[in-house]
Length: 92
Image (cartoon, rainbow, N blue to C red; front, side, top):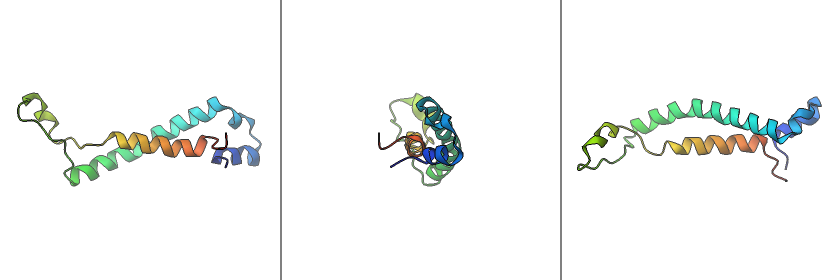
């Protein structure tokens, strides 16, 4: 099973898409753009659902994190997986 970039390589006859460093750069840029798009939407959704981090009453400095939604790192993981599926050679 070939990723989407290999189809562009054959259609447009662009040899540069065959290099792993170019595909890694494209994957990084795609994951970065997806994170910028998805993270504000996730933050709004999690704030609306009151998915806040529990705060220990014995640590008063953590009170500033009271309205911070949890699981924000899952957006980075999802963006990385989506970008990888577009650029990685799954048959290799």
